[in-house]
Every structure is written in C-alpha cells, then in structure tokens.
Length: 336
Image (cartoon, helix red, strand yellow):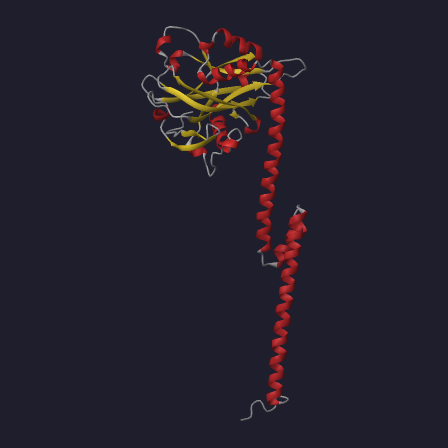
C-alpha cells in the first residue's frame, strides 16, 4: 500500500555485484525516474495453497486488476484483466537498526520487516491480517531497468515470499488482497480485488500464452519459474523444504528471545534487595533458572545481613569494652 509518504530504499552494487550498500531513501518518483532510475529493494508476496492429498498440485492466488484501476491508457477500451500479487517497496521505516549485508541479502531482516508490513496492509485471511509465520522466503530476483506501463522505469531487487494459506478453503470468501487506488478525482481509497486461483500448471501455462496480462511483479515470478523449468512437484518440494527451514528459524528466534528475556530477568533478580520478594520468586516462579538465581541472591542477602549484624555486635562489644576500661563497672561514669 501507499501508506502515506513512503520513502523507498536505494542500494548500489559494490565488489563486482557481490555486495550491496544502502545509498539512501528516496521518493518513488526518484527511484522510478525515466532518465536515471535507482536500484532499490521491493518485496513480492504470492499466496499459495498446498494440496491436501498426494499427487495434487499447489495453487496460486492472483489479484485481478482492471485497466481502469491501473490507468493503462492503451488498454482503456478492453475488458482484459491483469494479474498481480501483493507487495511493495522496502521503506525507510523497515531498516530499523539493521544494516544491509551482502552475504545475508536473501535472509536480510530489512526484507523481512518490509514483507511483514506489506502482508499486514494488503492481505487478510478470515477478515484478519495474515500471519507472518506463514511467509516463506522463496527467490531473490533482480529486475530491470525496464519501462513501466504507467510511466517511469523499474530497476529493483525483489525478495519473493510465498504465503502459505493452509486453512483457506474458499478463496473468494476467505482471502482478501487489497491495495490503495486513486479515484478519478484523485482521492486515495483501499480496494479489495477480485481473485483468481490457478493450479501451478495453469499459472505457468497462462503466463506462457499471455505474458502481457501479468504485471511486472507477478510476471517476473512466473518468468523465473519458467526459465528454471520448475515443475509442480519441484515447486511443492521446495515449499516443504523452505517451510521446515523457516519453522526451525522461528523456533531458534523464539528460544533466543526467551533466553534474552530470562537473562534480563536474572539481572533484575540479582539486583533485588528485599528478601520477601526473593522468597516469593523461589516459591512461585515456574522457571527453575529463576528460582536458582533468586535462591542465590537470597543467600547473598542473608550472608550480607548476617555480616552486618556481626559487625554491629563487634562494634557494640568494642564500645562496651572501651567504656569498661575507662570507667570500670560504670559507677564512675558520672564522676568528674
């Protein structure tokens, strides 16, 4: 979606194209300039359905965009439908604190941030934003420079994500792909597009026969699959492998996040100075590590308290001995 004033991220190739670095954030007009287009980052999200039984094919779900929505003047008098997928520019807000590293471009958190944002903006399942856990990074595709039908030039490196729609039965009822459009008077509104579901073979056959009906985003995905000679079984197998890999990564990230939270909690406990609070943690905490840290901290506090009490008793005893030494049994304490 447009999402207000998006600022696409420009990148440039270095080290002979083996590395990339960020050149800055620009307006859409700048990155798509006719005379000097800028290489930039985008995401493409293709919803897919997995077959239930053996021998079945995956299917893909495409948005139907009419010429009047796309403002393609040369096609204004036709009734043709153009196919597209979800996605958009990587925006300045997607950078966070991350840097763009060449050897992690495919897995880069910047692409992931952009994909999750676009997913939340453009795809609904059962009326709710689609779950980002179902996103699978699939391909990294460089595209352009190439003329855009609506004007300008496209030159980008796109990260293609597959959105596995596991529980979607009726695409027209359960799935929504939407985007911002402009009305004739220039007002921006959100439009839900009609959808078409193709089996994998139908999808590629449709592209081979009518590539002009596929917009550049979904078109480059279809072209990549055709160029690689990917079959429906290859496609399914790749999805399964990548889905398992992503599941492992999610578990690892969850474990790391949990460990970080525990570490922070351990640090907090180590600074506690109230014995009753520590006793409560020892009694009620579910995590054994927290209980151990609390018990250790409690022993430290008890030891410190006992040491302070011993020190205080020693001081009192020394004071008493000094008084006795000076004044005997104390009867002469008030004598001058």
